[in-house]
Image 1 (cartoon, one colour):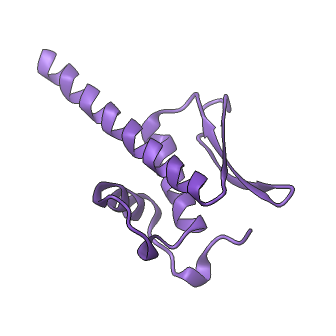
Image 2 (image 1 turned 30 degrees about the horizontal axis):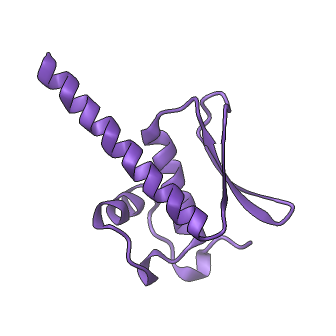
Length: 107
């Protein structure tokens, strides 16, 4: 039982670290990050008064928030043109399906 608890703790830590890396990528691309209680909906990327904002739902898991954030990263930036840590890049590719530059999100 103790080993199982340690395993799940490592997974949660990994998910949280990936989420932090993804949020940093969004911030580096002029996306405002807001952490709000949204009832477990997960949040997402939107534009308010012409400014991109990514909402992180504080009532959802790090894994779900990271998956939503990965999709936002793939919309905001061309991940092929910059260095991204391999595990973060794999996460983005797994959860967003990388898009062609012509399909990028428009500000």
